Length: 206
Length: 173
Image (cartoon, rainbow over all chains, first blue to last red; front, top):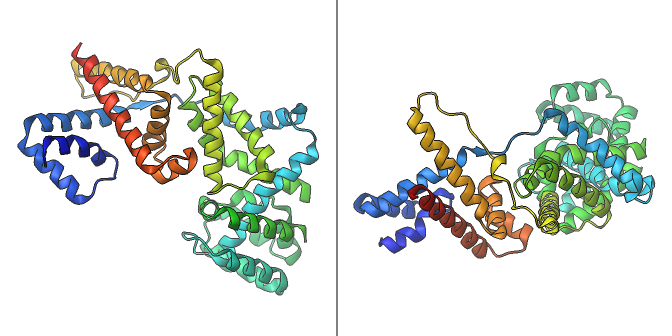
């Protein structure tokens, strides 16, 4: 490796982008070239220094103040009506509910499920006996990343009407959707999301 | 119950993403107050845009893109401040084993770093923030900014080089 190649490559070491052979070549060159060794040390110092820079955290109470002010802003004329708010908000509710259903019925959450599989699962969940739904809940809850409190709540509300109520209201259950569910949802394409929204919306409406 | 469920969906969305949106904004705009304005604006836009949401990638990418656009617009609209105030950056606590000389050098070094980052051109700083501070992949940044991965890498490495050169000049003064 030449000094020019070293200068071209050295930053990738700190970016997780360098191939093992590039890393080795950079280190070998640095070992044999004093000026490049100094440059490498300088870059190391720079990254170490940047780790020490941070912005101040806002007060803890700040996070709780955001949502009420958004509602206030939306309700004070920046939105045309509360009805619009609710109509627009159905999408995240539906999508999240769908993600929850995916998590419970269909997915190893780390990968993306084909939308046909998702829709089949949703249709099946509606068509089959509610006992299956309860079984799925019980089975899933034992290994799902729902918090223990949420899991207990769902089990306590485990009769068919209440489980359906949880599905339809998208209330308590949604608050327990974990990042893995959201990631599965986020990993979907536009087309898949659109179809999923429709399916979840229909599921909630029934 | 259904309507309440819809509203709760949006509420959950805000609660889930508010900190991410805040920190994206905060690294672009100069103050907490500016970042707060951006957060409010972003979620109102998200709210208004949900019915037309057809993001080509994931929801977070969509929200991130909105946040970047709103924050950059806020900076452009004000035209009075740099992207971030140097004074807003605080240092990590010092190592108790460091000597006073070490501490002084550390302070000077970090001041030079802050200044260097602050001086980056807006687009380079944005890419630097997204890559280094938010740890997004180049592919994610490319989706958000509609740029090529190759161009983003060049931007990022140029930013690093500029920071390094600037710090070196400052330290040598």
